[in-house]
Length: 317
Ligand code: NAD
Ligand code: LMR
Image (cartoon, rainbow, N blue to C red):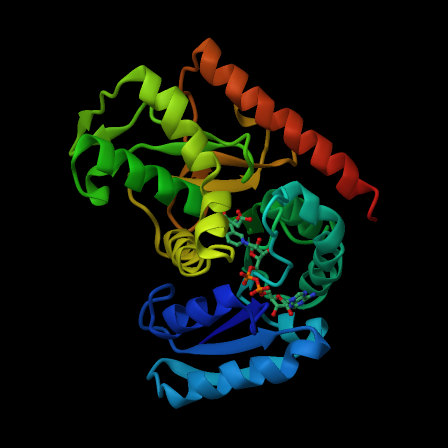
């Protein structure tokens, strides 16, 4: 039995994510105990979500609990999706969300520190995701840092899909992509090592730097403008991909994972940074890639942006 916590359970992402978890898309055929954490004002709406989940009669669901008590929610948790946070509106940056959302991750980090299972895996989705994961990890000093990840798989999936469209193949043919850095406009979707059906990808340089990189980086804002709301089903799907790969492994296939740096590629220790990684149940950053001056410059811009966010986050403690 696996105890899984989803925060922001009454929200848009959770409305998609909970069903994917309950269908076995993350943990396989393992029965799950689901805990839905919300703020007091949204507990009733989360109860409605729980009622619908129950009405789905999904065979892997062992129990569903709704609570506004973080201590109770994280007690014994083996996996936590930290989704609950305010989404940005039109014209806002994800970093603007730090003031509104940062403190949430102190309380939840403390509750994880005090009660979660030793093998807990925490995936932060709420924005600004990288720095919120940094905050949660800082608030949980007894939990190994590598247990805190942030979601950059959505950026990876966006890049994979756009590149596949450009070269005329299905998304699944594209491998060895990475989105370095921060889940923000500075992120660097990097196709230097990318392959399509095992062969190196060749694209027009102007398209790569002038269209592809900025479009992937700004795709969240594009969705907000077109849809009128922040991405939800695609974010849930990416969270499923991330946690499934973490738990079940990737083999040789690269994923983009934002995780606390231990100094790889010159990134400050502790900053939660998007790297190429493979998993055999725990993530290992793909090391030893040679970087051009252009790659280095783009990666350094992300280090700088995350340093600035971390300095603001440190003041919340
Ligand atoms: P939403 O507004 O629909 O739902 C958020 C829910 O979180 C609300 O029900 C709210 O009551 C709840 N909440 C707020 N504070 C909480 C707390 N302390 N504990 C528990 N629940 C709490 O928003 P959404 O569309 O589901 O998005 C959630 C977050 O995910 C936003 O910050 C959004 O920007 C972010 N996001 C990240 C990515 C990514 O790739 N990292 C992608 C999409 C969205
Ligand atoms: C996304 O990338 O879709 C989310 O982070 C939402 C946003 O604010 O862009």
